Every structure is written in C-alpha cells, then in structure tokens.
Image (cartoon, rainbow, N blue to C red; front, side):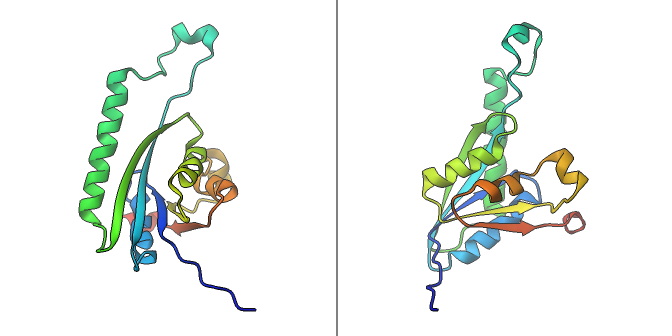
Length: 162
C-alpha cells in the first residue's frame, strides 16, 4: 500500500503566552519548510456568565476597559514571542486574538482551525495525567477529541521550563 505523505500549508498554533505554550511554534515552523502560513492564536477566556437572576451581585463580567487591557496584554505577549521565535523565510505569520466563553477554549481553537483552513493544529501540553488532568481539565485533550484536522501535541514537562 502506497500512501502519499501529508503536506501542511497552514498550521494553527494556539499559545497561552507561557514558556510552555510557546514550545509548539518552532515545531510548526519546521513542518512548513517549503513555505506556508502559521496562524498564531491567543484565546482570551471570558469569565463565567452569572445566572441572570443574580447578575446584579456578580463582578465576573469584564468592563470594556478590562477587555481592552486583556487584548493589549495578549498582543504584547505575541509580539514578544514572535521577536524571540521569528518566522523563517517563506513562512507567513498571521496573528489571531479571540474571545471564548469560560471553559470553551478548546471549542474556539477547533472553530478557528476550520475558519482559517488549517491543515494541522500544533499545541503544547504539560502532559498531566490522572487526577491532575481531571481536576484542571485539558485543552489539549479536548482539542484532540474534537479537531477535524491532525493535532501535534508537543509535550513539555515542568522540569524543562526552569
């Protein structure tokens, strides 16, 4: 059986602006040696929406100023990341900063993969298992379960971040 090798032209790289989150970017660049587009994505998770009956007691919603500040922080972080890890010749970098409801970051990542026409999603993971994953949830695991394109998970153990 002869199978053609896959060719990637557009890769979605979700980052959380931590040292771990940026580890998938060089892998995406390496897969695009012949040229292509890296869609660098920062998802800003919105606070939980309060029950409308009790909304007047809640302080979880962001003011326009707080939202603007969150976007500015994300854009500054992405600018720093791209200075530290610039795109190689032939690779175009497109930046996306988007909102997602609380607990829906992985859903938003999968949506952006469809919207951008990504051939692959490359993301970093801390590699937690068992109780740690169950308590904290796992964006990487949810993306693996729901993405319509291949997913490259770059495992970054905590000891490698020191």
